[in-house]
Length: 311
Image (cartoon, rainbow, N blue to C red; front, side, top):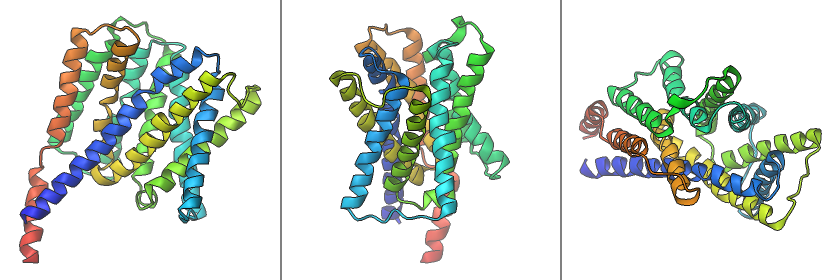
């Protein structure tokens, strides 16, 4: 019985670690994107190269490993929807929101997605949300408010709507990744289809907007490759695998660690200052993650009952 409990605990810690790695990887997007923009590449071209290169790598891997990639038309349509509405929708609306509101306000609105996911579970899946999750959610949101400090920002309805739409799209991607037809699928296949559909979308967008499909110089191409590996392949795969282990709502709360890492990168590489708000917000987010890892009494009692019946 002790070995079973330790196995479940270690599995949960591994799932948390995977989602944590995903959040860290996603957190580097703004840094590498800004470096690429300085080299003269457009947003559309950069996003196309990011996803197109990733798709080539993943399809090559599937071919070499002889992994069966076939799926039903219904399932393929589901993957298409979470890719375009979820992943592309989230990326596009967030970047457009930055044209109208500050990055801090856009970030706090974007990271409302854990709230949307928990509300979805309550209304549509009729799941009981534990007090522990509610506490973690409240602590995380307060921590995010401290970190991004949106109090000094001017209100812009279009910008706020776009940023909140980004949050809804990302919540849709999380929820879609946890549905039965996707949850039972190999994470490497999920990553392949998601990245491929994103590449297809930005390919069409580049053609329609008459943007180049190649990088203007070597440096911008290198940044596009970095974005492919560290901001696409790694985070999408680890997130898909992590959701399988810890569940969609837990994963969304753990993923809220990303703004802390973004702020850290800003201090290290962009010359931003370490503030009291950042320290307080970081402590709250880390504390909420610790609480999330504490064993649930309900689950422990259920486990005991199952083990006693097995005896």
